[in-house]
Length: 537
Image (cartoon, rainbow, N blue to C red; front, side, top):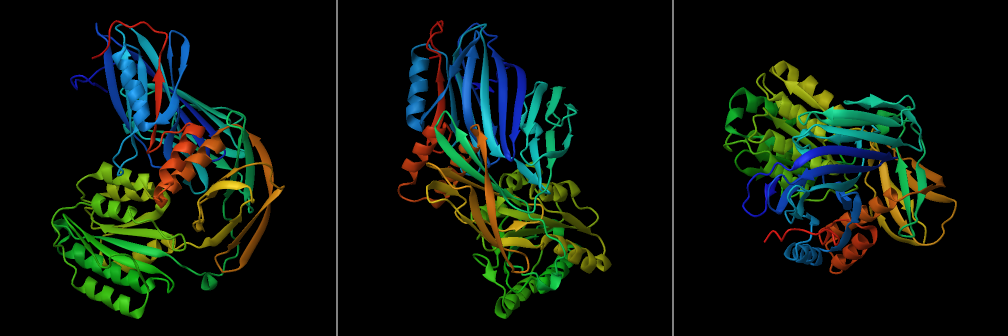
């Protein structure tokens, strides 16, 4: 947090409370922050949040002297003008906007004209689909998102599927497993709450009515459950991207072991797959501009590339090739697997792990650590963030067994060609094309509905052996707003990715109706009732 006038560091934050709420896979995380202006002048303070791309700001208000001052979503330019006008006239005001940098999902929070000696509470709510870990719902708050003050909080849990177990790194879990409470958690400790629910072999559908917006959202979820699979009959249609460390530290036996591992993996690729090989160091070397189909000609090109591979690309910048990969949207018919081969000595370990975590919905990431001196924290960190697993090779004799074991974990069976027969009166839905669902994953889809719908929704798919699945899913009724807001947010993300001519107008309409910060909209709060001592000009 710093002073907008002269960039000096300000120590205004005196208290922090987290109010976390699970509603099935929907997650609302409210930061309740108390600020105190210790100085003798009005101040304007600015600070930033960097959060996963799966999140957005869905509520923003302030409390001064017991009064709640509600924020409103406006178009970004209008919100900035509203905030600036309030500053100029001496009113206390607040602004939450999404930054322009597309590489990060960062937000700037501004508090203007906070009078000397005044305290204010700021309430910022982030909305997200809960993280998925082996089919369980997870709330994870890394230390870098926590301020330098101890944090107290509460996590409320509502699961229509029924709760089997709750795990938390902090606090006390209630006997009913519907609440976790914690007090004064140090700022260097992550906060994790994992909810294990009962598993169902069939999808679930919930229609939620939001009284405030008078809108309805249909949320569909499913966790694949397979039994007695015949591995010989499983059809694997995947995209595999090998990301190969060719930095100077890989010279000698390390690059030799890497080449052996690559040749084994190439031979094991499923016939229906696509693949690419990307070398990285200070620069990048892409075998193909984009992944190519598995065929004899392309495999021959790949083998020749591996034969000529050396540790000749200088430093170890892993985050740049990952960003380039993530900038290319995956084909939903070819689920993406990234397999990193490295000794782990990268330039920016935290930044690399965070980049994978921000894009984890795109892919699964696995890694093969090479040598006894491998940076295991990096290798395990990117695999945990990418919902994959790590393996390590030290001796040549271990390579084949270790590589094939990792291969079997990476190439899991999946449910694919998923088609949701949305009701005719569905205005918007996301995703447009449902990606394949692997073991441990969840299908999550949202639709915004106008009017009434039938008592069930039809869903069709192919199981891992190519057999047709056909479900008629009963629609349950629910109340609240989380599913509606998240439906709007998922649709906004899809519209941004489509980048069509009329996209901006649709995004603004949705963001203003459902009160969401977006690429084109911001939250602004102005206190019209408080008397201040001049402005922060």
